[in-house]
Amino acid sequence: MDEFCKNCGIKLKENAEFCQNCGAKVKRAKKFDKKIIAIIAIGIIIATITSAAFIMTSQTQIVRVDNVEFEIPSDYVNDPSRTEISMDENVKSSSMGWSNDKYYIEIGVTRIPGAGINSKEVASSLGGTPTKMFGYDGYYQKYDEESYSFIFGMKDEVCMIYVSDYDAFKDIKVIGRT
Image: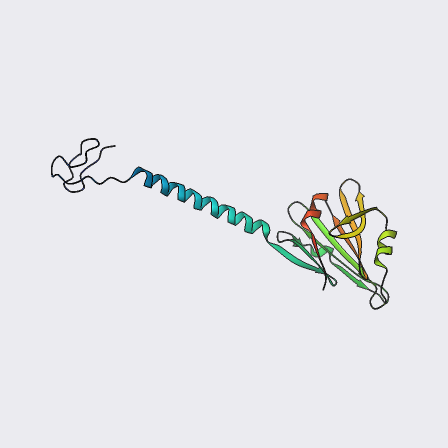
């Protein structure tokens, strides 16, 4: 690439340190400066993309079913057709559903207000394979190769987590009673 004197504008000889016309010192941009700027710019772009991806994937929401809280990713939206709350004189049952582009989650909580309930006994009576998940002993069930549930007792509540795909279990964290 041709270089020209910044003082008089004449075309400079290759690798000249001084202008052959006016004698001005030739000032060249250092090649490593351009490389360093490019490397820094690429680093900033990568850091920005990584940060944005981390923020997007790490955002969660706290959901509450009856008086039990769970944490699920923020990309799950409440499925209003799957929200049920029923209460008779003896039993209160609440169930809510959420879905994203890949999975469906439904969480149900049943309790007997004021009377107490042996939640572990009730969970075991529903059947399944004894398993520990979310820090609780409970019962795992598989339905038609397509959906799964985990039923466990928490004090005087029986909690059921139903998922459309086994991998959806990893999206759920049981926080506990409020």
